[in-house]
Image (tube, rainbow, N blue to C red; front, side, top):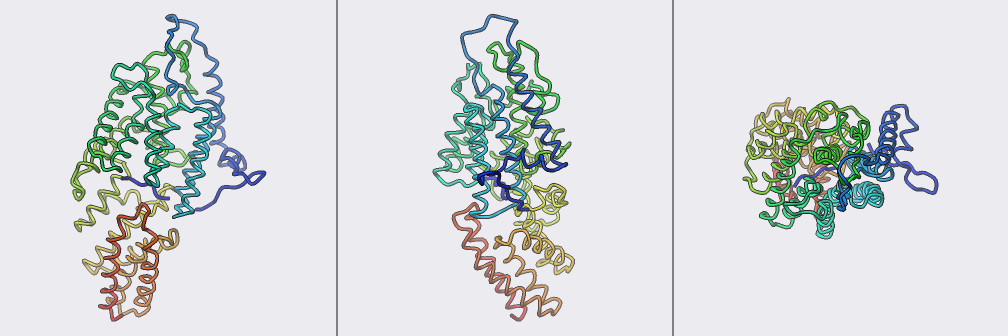
Length: 452
């Protein structure tokens, strides 16, 4: 399953020791002003839309529109803005273990505030589920499943006229839960429902400015008030697409809140979700070693970051290093602060150069591997894998250059890596412990061959 793994600025505290909100923090900086205005416009727009009444059209039906299709309240909007800012901070900080869990708890705290304001708004419910699956222990998976189900609303039948059962992120979340439980058939069925939800939305046009903000800055005239039971289906669909656009903005490869990202805005959000559906299908039913398993993902979304990571891992496994580097290199330019410290990206780039060096003996590859591994050492001192890999590079490098200092450094790094690897047990890296234990044996062999 995909993982979004985590400049540790920390969250400032306000009066009484409570965490100051993102909005109050950015007021203190000029570069934060556009973000503040964005949030203010969002809130003001919600207040405007909420005052628009259904004053024309057919008589009001007795049925009540699904609350999941209502725009969020002022309080819910401010809380989810704060939650995404905290999530971006988590991704930039890239902490490990208890520190990362504390960062994650702060994100969930803000999402809980959003849910308290709007308990049936699907984005808030499914987003909390996503955060729980960042640490997929059985109890958290069960709670995430309940939240995903709630995000889909009560009308799940084929004849339902409300729209929250078309909330694709909820179906994708249920598929992830089923896959974690080992129920591939249920997972694939949920993905089919997600695909159907996207098909229902195919005719929907996103708001002019994109996302919930765009819908509020360009609100529909009465009687198309989102709270009106007479709401046209086309407008109902636009509401769901707007919420999906906000959901997609939490992706690791998306720019942080307040940073312009024209490339992200230019890609149809529905294509992004079709790509995500195909990614989850590939993880469930395709050959786990086949690098070509993600071609359908890239057909929908060429920039699906997690699919690129998975494809690169498989290419490295089969020593197809040039292809692996071409797959991942565009993301290694480090222009996006959320990717600049992303541990899996840096590790894979280091591994590509390490494997090429061990295979070819080309010293330029050793230097490039050393550069990425030093960056990992500075930014992620917890990552045992980087120490073990660095030991292999340095052992071979010392042999090729007769440099005793590199050999001594190799021994030191291997010792550190071996000591830190057990901390990976019972974490998202648990399934890698055996692989890296074997890598320790190979590093010892390399050190011995270098005269150590």
